[in-house]
Length: 213
Image 1 (tube, rainbow, N blue to C red):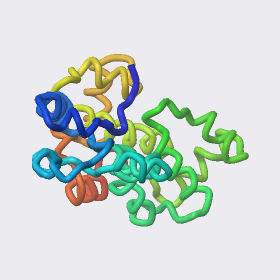
Image 2 (cartoon, rainbow, N blue to C red):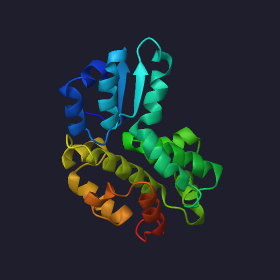
Image 3 (cartoon, rainbow, N blue to C red):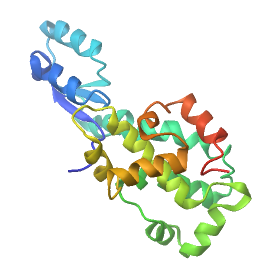
Image 4 (cartoon, helix red, strand yellow):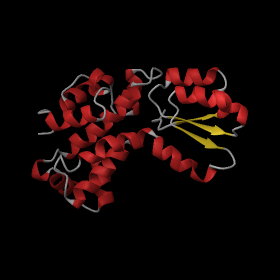
């Protein structure tokens, strides 16, 4: 029904088949464990680590920082680490451009529209569109589409989600629109968007003649 940023799983579940099922169905979603930890849990914790668990929160100790742990390790944080450093290379150097880029990266997959973004930044939508694309930077629409495509690529790594699920959750009206947007914005078929991770994503965005330059 909505984008999943991270999965919080009880330590008790990590001792049984639930951990394997979650990792199978949601292989690309960050997973954190939470619960009381005893000395005899060493085997379960080692098993969880081998299943790419992103973090552990201990019941009775880590509740005050649980929210920050989820934010630090979630899909949104991963998307920010991949996209926010692109601001300067893409020509987004003006304070308004950079603030808009930060909001696009973090919130566009949640349904952020250009009109709402402009209102939050205290400018008219036309002004924001013009200033965002100044100096050879991508258009605001291209930026929003890219953030949504990266969110879609994160979801595509989870076998539990079909392409129709991914399109709906990432804010596309249909799977065909998701496919067309990937081609138009990133110049690759949808199946390759998930591989545009880290340095590959940076190189593709900076070198593509489609959508960005």
